[in-house]
Length: 316
Image 1 (cartoon, rainbow, N blue to C red):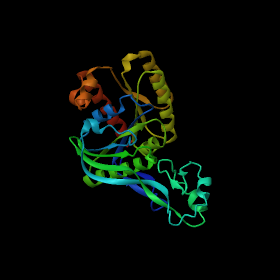
Image 2 (image 1 turned 180 degrees about the horizontal axis):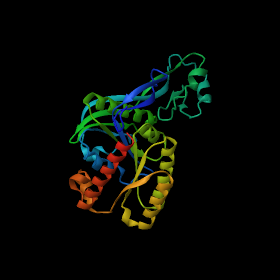
Image 3 (image 1 turned 45 degrees about the horizontal axis):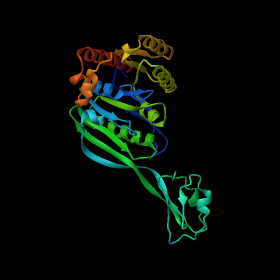
Image 4 (image 1 turned 90 degrees about the horizontal axis):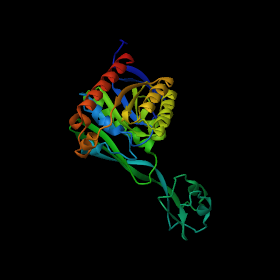
């Protein structure tokens, strides 16, 4: 395999069919995450996406998606997402023995005759196993929706998780799977992922197997603390990582500390974006920084993308 080729071999676990299979991955995946919310991750993702000619945009922050606010996608396809099962009690069969009430650790079964409160049900199926008259069944629960859309910057895959629903990690995986299918079908080179903040399950689902991870942080005490947690997570997955310091000039001392901590965790700062009130103006206009941002920030975003391209080429 030629050095620098976009083709690399990876191992993916095929959950639906079981086992492991070897596949060739021709599409580069770049995930952008943050240790905490409010760092400017989505704004920077949109700006970088505007610089890529051949790409699929992927919003994996399914719990609180907001990339659509900047890109104004037009939905072309919508698919219901079923993330789990909920218990249902057939009142015609129920003998009112109340065994299900006693075994439910979530206190999701109430009343006489017993009924399931969907918002509390965890889908553990304990009630199913103890019911002596087979009055309980597990039914699929719609947890959200997955969308394939078109934007002024190209195709976009995004999703919306329902209120109080879980399995966001599974929905993230479905979003990434759909984005990869579009990229392969249309011959696109890059998938740029707007990931969720933090280090939980949806973040892990967003970054697993990506070619490059970009972590957006800010020069605050909480910013540097959460940056370290994300980079430690990235190290567990052996991911190539870069750091962007947003609003770096509000505390230059902490910015220097971020540079030092990044080096300790095998990452480096790819760019530092200054604070500017014009950023808020561009957001209010639903424009990316490359469309309506100040010149100094546009220049820095371009430099960051050039660094990203070099890293992808050097480690391709």
